[in-house]
Length: 142
Image 1 (cartoon, rainbow, N blue to C red):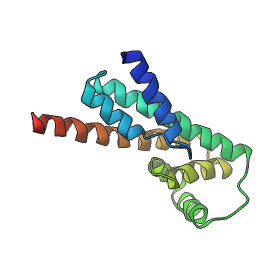
Image 2: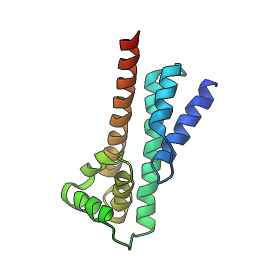
Image 3: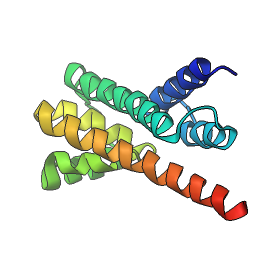
Image 4: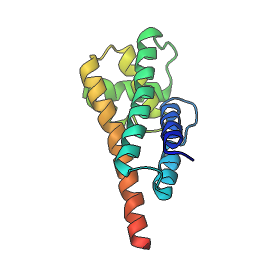
């Protein structure tokens, strides 16, 4: 697979992973790291951009379509956002809960600047940890 196609696949998987659709971005990132498809920093950057774009999409949806039904997860996520504000979006990488945090951040009209900062930072940290663990494991086996 060409480098461009690998990066596009990683972006798409990362974007989808930030929605309720399955994307398996960590698995794609690890596979591309193991195959040497591109430089590790570029793979982490592309995964972060794709996943952050998906998270921002959820924030926008939250601003457009206020949530009406209250679920246990929604109440928990809203509680974190009320207590910690945009800092709670450091957890936006978490499955299901992260999607709700992003939707609720939009619904609660949390200002864009802190939303973007903490959302992107949380997503980036996750991919840095995954890449570092993968690369460390590769060095250990060689």
